[in-house]
Length: 127
Picture 1 (tube, rainbow, N blue to C red):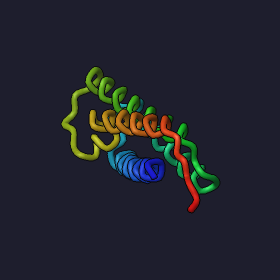
Picture 2: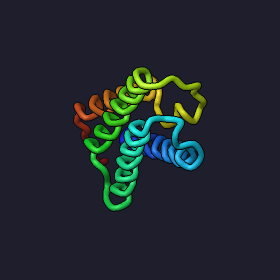
Picture 3: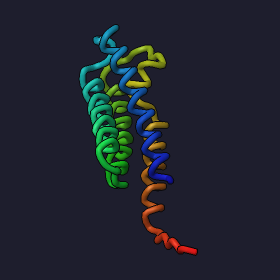
């Protein structure tokens, strides 16, 4: 059950990042550095691959762990890169593309929850 919830949460994050990236690239491409767009694109591409895998066959827990790990690292990288490179007046759409510290914390929390669930053995008894 947790894996299903984690997948749908990843799908919503991917859709939101894709929409934000598409709007930013169509309206004001020079607002953020290119590296930020590339890192966000990698997260979106990984999410789309995850969704396509889910359509073809059931996904493994390892796939979700990789996605949430990349999401957390990408958000941290974008935040540090934006801190070091340029100063902007950030709006909501910028934070969708860049990511926030909350993205990192959510990624780490999902990784911890998925790893914790993997440790238990489930026994199904028939009546």
